[in-house]
Image (tube, rainbow, N blue to C red; front, side, top):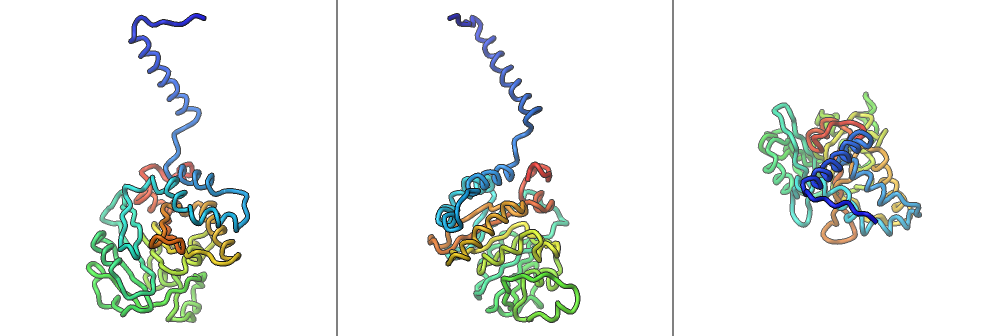
Length: 298
């Protein structure tokens, strides 16, 4: 067997460089550019969770390991820009923006059932540009006389987890004033269609449905760039089926990417989930990626 022997090492170096260059050009022409971090994360989540299992088997496998799957597929792409806002007892994940311009408005909503606004104040100190609304049935109404540039606006309201489609007309005034849903509050009371962050701390399995295609949010052209929810452990066969249904809708709708999952207070009873909007051009450019907002990147 004959061997090729190079007497001049520079020749070998040039051959290796030319081979690498040829391979790079081949990939660029015939394969294309590598996928965006979002596309890569979505494909990884599909691969890890798209299995032929029963609803119970899917829940038993995914619930205790979902935070690990998401960390492997999604969270690693955004880890350096994510900040934890709040305490060990209750907190949200905030993804820092990539760009910020004078005309950009920032609005954030917190929905919970406690008196404390410590978490809202911490976010206000961190992002002074944001107008922050805090909704709870235990709050004292302050939104009418506080300056949103310096204070958290608190509203005494019980927000229903079942958002209804907006019927423009008398239907707005027929609703229960003490229990509005999120679609009604955002459109009719705040008069804004895009939010930088919405954070909900109860009934997450129902609130998450507001993000799906043909939901009340979708029909009203509402969008939030970041969505933090607390998803309680499903109890019963129907709740476990609903858990799998919600997961599949998030994957196949291609509206929101599951970017972070944490166990609440170190237990298995609830998961804190961060969803990022990958379908709205403003959210994409401001928070997600510097790459173009095109289908192959989503």
